[in-house]
Image (cartoon, rainbow, N blue to C red):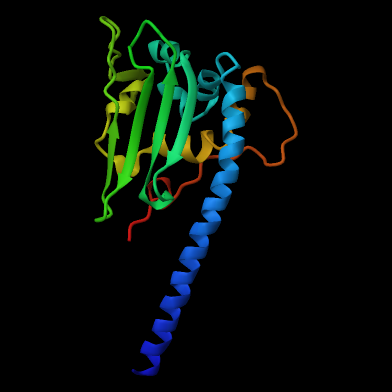
Length: 209
């Protein structure tokens, strides 16, 4: 074995140890985060209109939430964003709704999965619309045509570059309170300043391999 091969083997061993340590650390903090997320969800469920307000106040999500979309979002009781077995393999968005006049679903799920080949695919719960309430697929806004929010659930055309999923996972979900508070123009000192959604090289931090 030449010196280069020996060094590479040692490096591979260190990398494997680092991966195991990272996974253990990730699991530890994941359990800690779960505790606080459960408490946050409980409080939010008792604040009427929390999620629809947060969505409508978000500068990048609000353009596609108009008319009937806004009315339907008023029935959201909870939102959960969960990573799959490992953050690099995908994530799942779970929208919980109370009974409403627009559709029959109490839960709508959209899931993204990274296959072994590196290809990103998405799946979603079919929405069971009540008669006469199927939304238009697009909203005409000035001279632009914008995809409406509920169309996003059934759109699986380009899951690897889904900006809506990226914005929800990377910006809205970590701190929805900052957008909810914009409703009344509240300005409070925060530990972290408001931040714009960050451009990331792969969707939702997914990495293949």
